[in-house]
Amino acid sequence: MQTQLFIGGRFVPAANGETLASLNPHDNSVIAEVAMAGPADVDRAVAAAKAAFPKWSNLAAMERGRLLLKLADAIEANADALARLESLDTGHPIRDTRNLDVPRTAATFRYFGGMADKFEGSVIPVEQGFLNYMTREPVGIVGQVVPWNFPLMFTSWKMAPALAAGNCVIMKPAELTPLSSLAIAELMAEVGFPEGVVNILPGLGHVAGQYIAEHPEISKVAFTGSTAIGRKIVQASSGNLKKVQLELGGKGANIVFGDANIDAVVQGSAFAIFHNQGQACIAGSRMIVHESIADEVLEKFAALSRTIRIGNPLDPLTEMGPLTSRQHRDRVLSFVDVAREQGGRVLAGGKAPDDAALANGCYVEPTIVQAKPEHRVSQEEVFGPFMTVTTFRTDEEALAIANGTEYGLGAGLWTRDLQRAHLVAREIRAGMVWINCYKRVSPASPFGGVGASGYGREMGFEAMREYTQPKSVWVNVDAQIPPYYPR
Ligand code: NAD
Image (cartoon, rainbow, N blue to C red; front, top):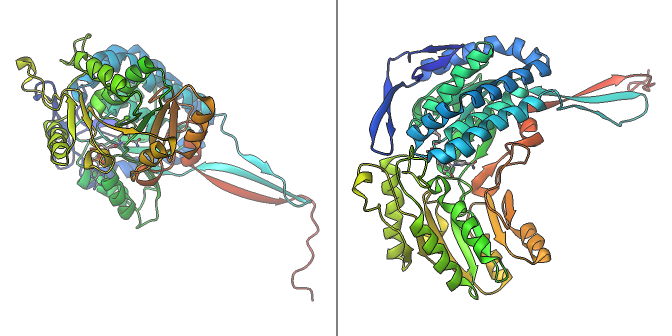
């Protein structure tokens, strides 16, 4: 297990010698002491990235792609070890890290490996006599700051398009979950990424993260995390007018119309909110259900939630693991009191499980709370296995509730009426909409939000645009330009 900073192709201690313990959220035991980067380490990483940039950005795109493809193969070859490490550090059940996180990480590196030499510029039809073409150049040195909820997957979401486009990367994983990104760094060194192209700096947000956002020689900062820190990133980036990309919080609406397939709704909604213990920005955390079927949906949904197997993430039968930290577990549980104070009714869960074997861990039962749209639990991101439920009568009312938060990331709707599905999808204020499904993602499909959920898109061609700058080149082929200052 690597526990040091990855700078210039080598694992090195932090300049100030500081470390932070990474804990196993199943029992809060220490997994490893990990080096914590400070400003001097960010400077070292920037120097390494600057030295690597000219050669890397001028390397044939196909060669950059080939390295990303080799990395995808290496991830698959090490799938079991990576899945185990991710489960230990984050609390994700091993069945998810093995079947979702690791394959998705490999798929994203592979997708952008294939993309590297297919992302083209264009020739623009301008006046006769001129050739105008546009190339897309890498932005330069890119800082990437990521949260703890999907640390392995986010290495690929963030790094793969940046590297395919020819940028050099300085990534700061979250202080709670640095281990899988260091494991990826080790594989990158093994498959032959040149030194300095990627630098991984575990460190504190307000120290290393803040300095990355401020750094005058970093040209872009891509951030995934809370809306509050997103605002700080924008402020910190203003010194050198960095390009900023923000993937922030969400409060996903999950609209269930009266004609929906109830069994599909129950399964899909449980995945929407309970997968990864609800610690997903795109979690479907607000069910908005038509009053004609609300009783049946809620009865079946609550019954399913009570049967979800909670336990040690390393047990292959576990369906829900612990939250990632004790502090976060306490925050999530505090929302149960908030809900009750405002008149909300707890329909399921609302507490830590009674199982003594889980007493030292950060566990919370799947929780369903009936609440009004204006209640705090319906407005604020809880980021846990916590679903609010509200009923509606008309489609207009459902839409108003769905659009009634500051966020606009993902939203879902369930109906058999095709016309209604497309109309509502058009009217929902969100970057992603799922019809009769929830939380589908693909490396090929744009991912991101609007409003307090941020701006910019990951994945697909959109991500390549985010990590490049257009350059327009004008050539006088045979134009006769009349003199502007005739004499
Ligand atoms: P967070 O904002 O507290 O931290 C995210 C990252 O920012 C961490 O690496 C942290 O160290 C760093 N950071 C903290 N303070 C900083 C500062 N002042 N300057 C620079 N960096 C700083 O978020 P979190 O609690 O780790 O993650 C949960 C949040 O992330 C939720 O709001 C969730 O919705 C959001 N999220 C969004 C997406 C998306 O794609 N939209 C995906 C996953 C998570």
